[in-house]
Length: 244
Image (cartoon, rainbow, N blue to C red):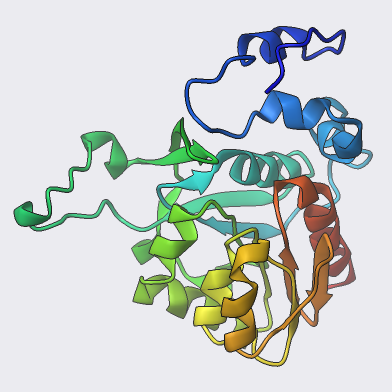
C-alpha cells in the first residue's frame, strides 16, 4: 500500500499499515475508499431501524481461516438490527502426530481469522456445530477466506447443516469462497450464483450459472463475490428476511 498521507478519519490506521509485513487485506484502506462507503456506513452509522430483524435467528458457520471483515461485518450488521446471531464452528480438530499439524488450546472456544493471507486474530464462537440444528435458524451464512470454506466443505456435518437448512426453506447464503460449501452441498445446481472469481469453474462444474454481480439472489439462496460486496450481500439478505 502507498505510504501517502491521508486526511480521512482512518488516517492513523492507514499510516500505521503503510508498510505491511505480510500480504494482507487492510480493513482501514478498504473502508476509507469512496467506492466502499456503503460498507463503512454499516460500521459508523446507527441503523435506521435497530429492531428490523428482532426475533430472527441467524447462524454464521465458520472455522479457522475465515476472512475477518466478512465475518465481523455480518455479525455486527444483523446484531445491530435486533437479530440473534450465533457464530457456529466445528469442534477443535485433532490430527495424527505424523502430519505435524498443531492446534492451540484457544481453538476449543475460538476460531482464528485471516486478512487475505496475513494472520488476523481469535474470535469466540457461540456454539459448536455438533450442538446446533439448522432448523432453529431463519438464515445460514457462510463467510469466505480461502481456508475457512475449503475446510468446511470437507466436513460432512457442515454439508448436512446447509442441506437441512435449504430443505426446510431457510435462507442460505455465502460470500467470496463461501459458495464452495453450497456447491459441494448440491445447492447451486440450476441456480444463478456469484462468488470469488477464481472459483467460477467450481460453481459451473456443480451446475450453477456464474454471475459477475455484487450479490445474486436465486430463490432463497444469496451469494456474493468479495469483501467489497458486503453491503450488497447483507442488504440482499434483508430483502428476503423482511419478506419472509
